[in-house]
Image (cartoon, rainbow, N blue to C red; front, side, top):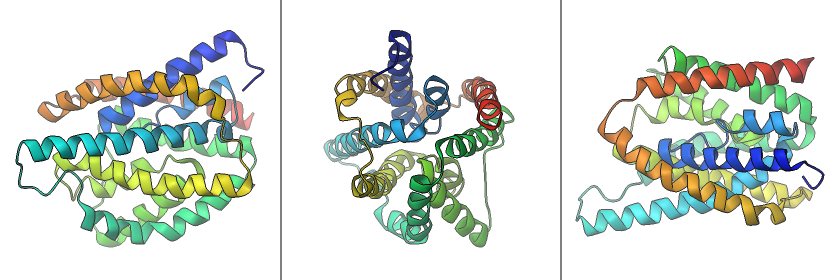
Length: 257
């Protein structure tokens, strides 16, 4: 990213503020809801995925620790904010497709991966606009969704829509975000190991200024998450879906043109 213009750097910084906001506010979306914007600035997902991965490792672990401390202070009997038995069960289903997906990212050309990312986000944005989130009521379909989510997570870290289609049906909303954070932490650790193994540039110098950008969004997102737990916000998600649809459609057109 050393040859970008000042305007591009500013845009990337703002997008990472947005990334931090949606990650802590929703429990997912740090990658799937920011990559379409980032790829319009620089069409190379491998540049941004290591940065997003490190941010997720930092903020997911920090949020889980802080929430569990709050739970202990409040003397809540639920056993913490992460459902570990359920987490290990779904991880067993996802691990092999995850590893296959990691290999796919390393071998596929950047423009192909960009097209895949934009295509997934287009479908995801439509589910927001029409208030029809992915849902499954069959254990075999659940397994398929988790395996596909693991694979997509391995290719681009944006498997959240398919994974949440299953997980959201089986966990209370008070445990949903932190359980997802714990899952993302494990999956991203595998991803980072693959990056290191093949010598992917982790863009370490850019963490110095992008981590504070994500931190600003993270703090705002924590407050938004408290609001979401108390109320429903369909209008917000429909507007978000509309913006994502426009941006991803433009990006998909550019990727296949």
